Image (cartoon, rainbow, N blue to C red):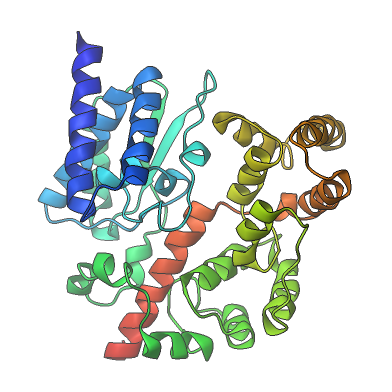
Length: 347
């Protein structure tokens, strides 16, 4: 009886949130909602998300602010509709399966980004909340909201980042005039902003993914590809379209997962173990087995073997450096907002 109640409640809350988030509930939005809600209910997770939604509502109703999102959680449309995260995953091609792993024993995790002054209060709210076993909700160690000089401006974050097209802001970012801006204030970051001159949130997201230890070696390759407008292609149309956003470089874990589904015919939740093969375990033996399976599936799907081989070599080269796109998008939008504030207030 309890399970049925929480399943029904989750569905109602998600559709109510979707009606607030979107002007029209298009078939693609409804399809994504149904996929996520069905999966969560089938996996016995509905109660967890209802509790998380109640916590998010309590935070907002108390006058506290939350950042856009952290980690893989922004990949879930359910999280977006429940006000747990604040970036539309459909607008940025983020994946629910990067966030939700149905494998037994896997912990479901959401990291909340709240103002530093309210960490103690929210910590108590979390402690008071009855959490579902196997789930975890925690606070990030350093709030992204700390970079915003005036608290009242935080309210504008959610509307400004929805349309990150302000010319004055992008001119400042391209000049590297981003001291004290979130993740863009270091000399190293400012030099690369000035060299690459990103325009548009997708290019800034790519930089956020590369300005990380272990990923910085990709910056010269990205800059050269952008400056020469040279996009690597493998000749497989769907893959080339996917990688065009990053000039043919594979920067995101979600790109690996999507390639696995498109070419290797992996199931929705089979793409996550595929992606992890590039990071964990006895890498050589695991990758060899993964390659054999991927190549065989690609042949069965009718793809040219030489093209698939070139694609695999690309994945093997870039795979260990790929970054979580959900997190990178939120970081890029927060960085943009900080730059927007600086461009228009001087703070």
